Image 1 (cartoon, rainbow, N blue to C red):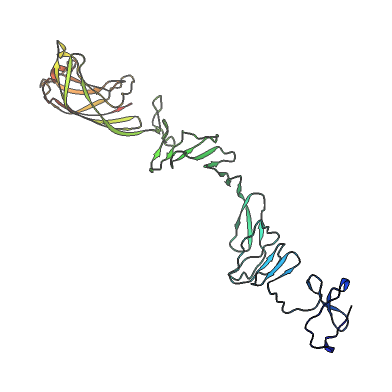
Image 2 (cartoon, rainbow, N blue to C red):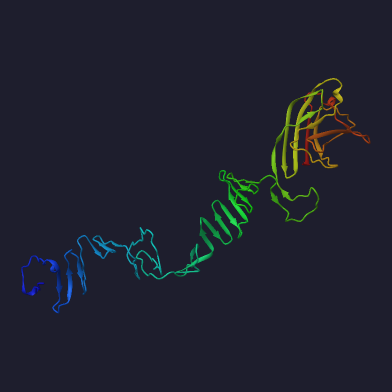
Length: 369
């Protein structure tokens, strides 16, 4: 090994080390302490002392884990530990498989300053974390968890297209598989049910057959086989009323109109009928004539004959001293028209009394189905 004192020489442009074990360059202080070493591979080692500036033309590498690039970036393959993160516009990006262990410094403002530890209280598997809003503390919520695509809130949970209620999932809200309809149901099964109400994508609420709005919480006025507090139907529409006088009688019509509204088990209807017995064969002029074609059959129960109001008759051959009234027949869609005089038994309207062209009748009624 050759020792050179820089103070005693000048004009040196290069230094070539020896071969073998002497293929190394070291710099020592006057007391013999080694301060800098360059080995045969070009690796430079600062043994001790204070270095205020270290400049690399491309990049400088510390061991196998940290690289300092010439443009100011730092690349680390190991764990980075710091008590302060500072720098305007700093961001944490591209962290594959990153693990944050221990106390995590807070990221405060654009310079990431004022960092402090964050603690998580009530830790447990699958709990979602909420913040207190007043400190650097976080809380794992015991009633808010997420696992296996299921979000659980208290005793309600969201699983797929179902919202489950109850600790054992005894009640469900399902999203229909048809369109954007949302169906509500109560069941212990996770399969699609058809008994609950459905909020339609049109904005309407639909009920399954036999289902509706239950008013059983209200006080009851009666009971029995027809007692009911479920509003399970609403319907409105039109129908075509006709005359019927049996065989041998044919009717011709110029107007046939029927309107109805059904609420629950109650039907309200209006009829405007203009038609006459245009053909009567043989001795069929005395056949009983009735109006038929109501949209629903009348309730079939003993002594139930809903009255029908006659608004007008026109060109019917009814004697001036007789009263005319109408009622519905049990278990049918028929309306009977009766003529009555004083204390006499009433008689049915006949086909022969309807043989004038443009015969007309107006009817209105309410009945139970």
